[in-house]
Length: 449
Image (cartoon, rainbow, N blue to C red):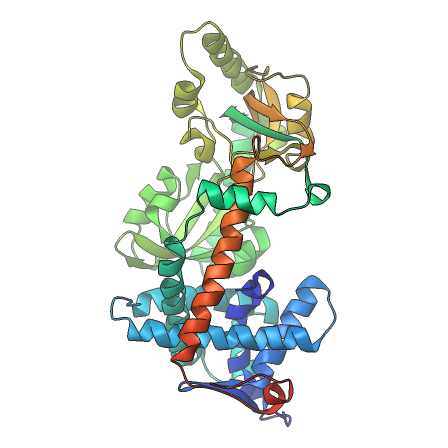
């Protein structure tokens, strides 16, 4: 699948389904441009996909872009048809609903909430989901069918070297400065003044919600400090108890459905929550977070503890990895013995220029193997903390080389191999599926099966 179409493909399922309600108010000219098995693809489906790519990537319309979008939609239906023929691929209603709920939540934010979505569609949210569930089940089945094929594709050392040797020397890219780092994090100590101020705010919010003066959703939108849920009324759906910190999980697992929990504290601040549904260890819930004023915290204990830990490591009394797992207060790196990775892909090689000023200042004077003095840092979730950093390795900016950058080259070689094999495989799959191009598609020269 062309990368540029990935972000908009799911939205097409929902946006195109809004068409019938819109048609009540205005005449929309449309036509079938392809029939794939029992599925039809409308010109408006393709136009919507193209428009999404044009807006995201700031590119102009072209017949080539439109053809590429149509080809992608046809390929997706071909995948669905073959996935449905594969009796080993099964997708439950719950799995389809999880995917659909996430997409609907995103669209609601874009169009202005649930009421606006229901107005556009002309039906209740439950009816919208019922209409779309099979589309999303199809999408999941196609993903699994594709994934089974992708998992069997590997890049051998010969593949990697051949791929690299095909690139002209003067076309080899330059890689910016890279580092691999580990750290141990300690959070500032919350003062009683900061805790009391946060508690006063949280009690007022909870009392208002419990008394029915305001809804939890309204108060979350107005006051919650959680950037991931405040705009959505504090809502999280289908969260596993193992995906939240232990203190939060302990309250969420015991809280009766539909009731407001007590106020409780985690490393992020003060919370209260309402569990909406529970399915085993997975829950839907709303919560409100009030963080502690970081101008009224005490840094000294965190700095002092990090100095003790650094001395222990340098004296050989403990390893960096062991102390990171025991003492660090940043969950992701703690579980990895302090290793810092890119959360989007798990990559250890990090571009220095992307780490930010605080990281760059800390690393500036370190040689490989050095451990920094305690330094201030802003964590990925926005919290201010202190850490000691070990520079595990540094690679200066250089032209890509197969000896020093094998892993990076291997990833690119694998991607290209996957694209080639998947394109050939799709050609084979199309041969056993009825495909009839019509209208605009036929005018552009696309040939039916």
